[in-house]
Amino acid sequence: MLEVGSLYKHFKGNSLVEKNIYRILAINPKYTGTSNFPNDNFVIYESIFQDGLCFIREYNDLVQELSDEEKDKYKQNHRIEKLNDEELELIKDESFIKEKLEYLDNKKQANS
Image 1 (cartoon, rainbow, N blue to C red):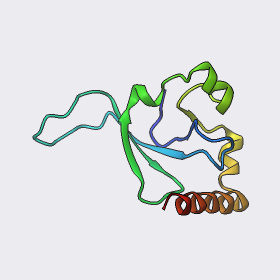
Image 2 (cartoon, rainbow, N blue to C red):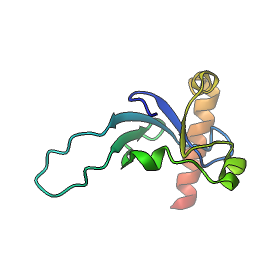
Image 3 (cartoon, helix red, strand yellow):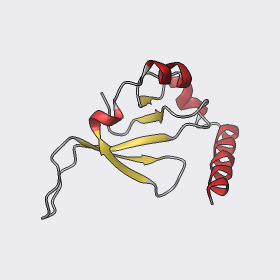
Image 4 (tube, one colour):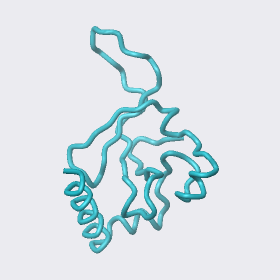
């Protein structure tokens, strides 16, 4: 079960530095526009290390269980999983933050 305000790691990546880390902003927000919009359960979430990156996705997709192969490869059971206490402390560490930002910068440069 996802919780608004909590931090989650995406499954892809071999370490916490390589994994995207998200904060859940809203679950099942109310759509107030006039066009048709699916009434599925949606989640709005943001990247905590990439300013301005915000996403929306179906709730069921985010909590989806990974295949056995993916579980073995990424050491996670679900697409996103809540950070544990040790990981929450790690992401506050200055050396981790530096390494994470360097990783993201290198990844961005490689993709441009």
